[in-house]
Image (cartoon, rainbow, N blue to C red):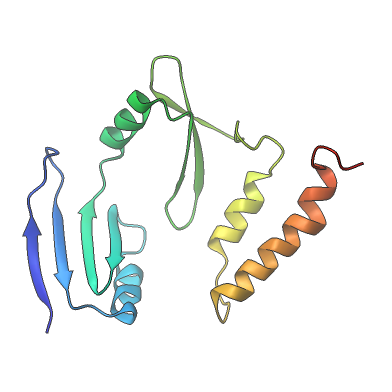
Length: 143
């Protein structure tokens, strides 16, 4: 039996709801139903927590912590945000942490569907890294 609990939060405007007794399949179904709506879902041993996303507040927290780069993926688009001197973030086409990694390829892998399981997806990602990425960007000491 599922139970729903509204949990208090210390961030103004943020809402959280916990649904207890949800299996993994139920969580996957919720993810599909939510789609690209501004709701964050987390799963922990049968509990699903739904939270409203407050990107402005989150970015302020990351900025004050000095996080230099944030990647945001909404299920369709990948955005790279770089921290500015004033602590704000600006969208950038390329990662500062991984300047030689084509972000379009990362986005392509992030949006891939139709795999039987995650192992197949991971195998194809590793293959891309070995065949396409590493030859263009050799590791130090490799020549």
